[in-house]
Amino acid sequence: MSLSFRQSDIIEIAKQNGRVMVEDLALQFGVTVQTIRRDLSELAELGKLDRVHGGAVLRSGVSNIGYEDRRALNAEIKTRIAQVCAANIPDGASLFLNIGTSTEAVAHQLLNHKDLMVVTNNMNVARILVENTNCQIVVAGGVLRRSDGGLIGNLTNSTIEQFKFDYAVIGCSALDADGDLLDFDFQEVRVSQTIIAQARHSFLVADHSKFQRSAPARIASMSEVDVFFTDQPLPSGLARKCKEWGTRVVYSGRTTGDSH
Image (cartoon, rainbow, N blue to C red; front, top):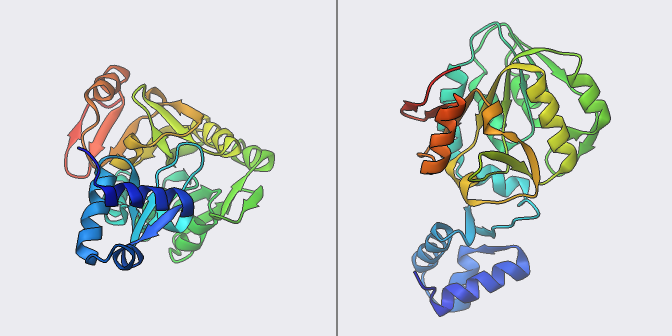
């Protein structure tokens, strides 16, 4: 699919500003907001932009988009994925929830669980779970990353190493064709690797947009994940690898693969 002149101009504006807004573009190009929304949807389908509330942001391979924009991106899909993930976590479990908007969505779905112990390096997760009086919350120490409320660094790793979790619920910034989980922050990668090592069962929550993105730092292989919760079928090569690894893939609607 070739781009229209307007769509090419939209991409250039996004490169300059990092994001574009529907109403601003409509005024600039003298077209309706519906026309701009169609343009942005087509650009998103082509992998050029990521849609967010009110506009779109540039898809980047070396730096992540803003946290509030990520929270708005595919929010309803993340909620459905989180509902299925939370349904697989029993009352009385111990678990770790790491940094990310997908894990925050899981936290919202755990508000009615009982007798949980949740360890997290995500201040947003801790604030969400305060509403569940049947949940013990342990916040891992570390350096606060103000952009997203995450705690990272050696102190975070040291805290995590004191536990053995029933479940680790993690997110990632990207997922490549080799089945590698990727992220942007090298310190966050070390934390995620420690979380996986300290968990009896590892759950990955990620929507289909992660297949269309890239990031420079490797967290782990999907072979180290027990269950992957997502919303759309995996690319055929990755689906085949998950089956070989015994990684169970659960869609928000149906299941494929074999359990460990």
